[in-house]
Image (cartoon, rainbow over all chains, first blue to last red):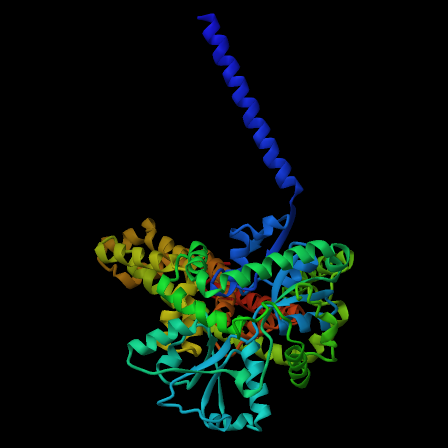
Length: 335
Length: 249
């Protein structure tokens, strides 16, 4: 009886030692990982699928990084979080970056996510045929005052010598009712995330839709890019390299047509509100914007587009003096 | 009274601003994260007139919304004081409507009323009417037995007289809650402008947020604070005048 009791105590002791040893190993593994925070620009949706995939598939971990991917939102600003030290990497739009640098923010761009700005204008070609930019004259065009779309539209109008008095600019917000009611001819939206949803509604109502892409009309205004601080790049270059490598690999892999289901599952894991069929339509649209050709090197920084973005902002007096944008571009992940 | 309200506000505002500056200079933050004093001053000079007009626009809507909410609370309070089924139904409906977040109800309001003045007014009224309603229902449901008994025994009591007696006997409480809800009217209007309108300081703040321009927001906050203080002082004066007029002070 006593022997059996001793055996049980011994067994229990060995089990506990093993558990503690394993836990200790796990802690050692975790300790050896470098922890960084990555603040996205927007909520978890198709536009961040590569970021989430790099995390979930263990690409960051393979590079010795423990990355906390934090969703963005309208009130969150990755650049401010970088400066305050709450995040080490973030996603910001080019106009945000240029504006921040013009006010002394010490940040650099390490990769460009969207090669084509996803901001397009949806319209009904049957009611509003747009063959040339001059056809915009007399139309009611939706813009978000203070937003990117206002800057892009004003640049477009200026490029084609269309005076503001020749169009009617309509202030938009999240409610699409004025567009559905036909009060507004062109409505700004994100081609990959919103166009499949709004387009489906129009099609259901028996209406055709088309998208106006400003980049095809010569306005190449850069959208989301990955940023970090200059200090981070100088003091922890290896961490920046490892992060960028893992991130770009994640994007490159998840956008491959062969990995379609993996991409959809990743989005649905974090965003249960969007139906799978919508995500399935959003994915190819995202692929076109991020990898215009199948062999495209993901994350490539388009210096010419950045220069044009700066010129547009200067012309519209959104920044007082040039920031010489080339100095900010540090493509650590490019081959 | 006015100068006291204003300098109290100025103490609060500049204490907050000093805390921001302390953070900026101790952490060596750029003007993008927290603007410097020079930038705030430049922005103030450049946008003061524009933002002042926007704040006055907002204040006008807030005053109208406040009046609307007082009317709504009075009507709901009068019906809600009844002990019959309709009274209970109105009370429950009023509480339930308040439980919905305004951002969720806003799209329905825009579909029904568009995105102009009427939507701003309604949203402002919806945000500030609840504290009013709670007090109004409480006050109007509470009998003033010693006075009401006389009118009931002489069979001269009607609903209008009952409401008047209860309101008059609780005039101090009513005025306090009306003054207190004025700030909510201002907040409600700014929220409405933020999510719906094309005018007012809420709309200007939305644009400033898109441009990550904290200097503009600080200027807007300054003007909102000053204008709200002036409105509160006016309401306090009005309350004092009413009390004096009815001989309760």
